[in-house]
Image (cartoon, rainbow, N blue to C red; front, side):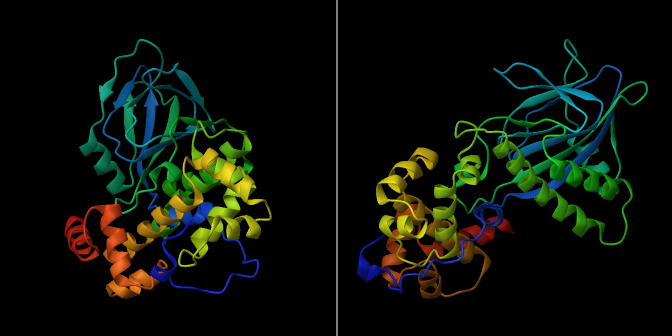
Length: 327
């Protein structure tokens, strides 16, 4: 399952290692960093079309009813307490109802409101609905985006999750009545929202058609196998090792893992190692041989070959280009 034995650091097999949280680890490494886009108050007839959302978008309806329109899908009402997460780059519309003209998003106005801690106002007349929009941007260094974000629109209705409800309430309060440390509090709550949302959708029985990530939360075999690889990417895992650690047969793991994620455990491990290495190359000054050992390669030459094959450029070139791009 892994690269040839002489290219990897050999380590003793773990004695039933403590399983970490793959959901939290995925949020951390895949760079699904959230930021509050806008708070919006609406009234009367109004419509807004959003087609410039490179990351995933979450809308939280804090009062009233907002209609969501996504191409090739039925229109759906979002009511007080509802939350909806749209895949990265999904063009969509929000409105007061059918037949309303959709205006484009005024990015400058939204940015000014966000910077001032203010509220964007759409439509006329008394406020009939309020919503908060959150954006989740993915780390460009990471390739495993199918695991980190949904492939379909995901909708959690009010009262489906007490914890999600409570987190939305805390976020509303922090945004409406900011105090010292509000920025840190809001950033933490936005990241927590994603975790609570995924839990709520997973508890509702969404399958792999919605998102492979959701199934990793509810399928204990895949979840625990992922957690082991995430916790110890340098260990030369074999399918047999993983199956033994999660207490299933090798055949069971070999069947269920690709059924959920579309790839074998070995392919996932290789991709995960390259993602970990890419982040370390960009964000640290660790020498190449240290990065190589961190992801399980005892030979820096073997690591360079593997990285070149995965990313189309050498580790050193990748470090230079990715740092220039982030400046």
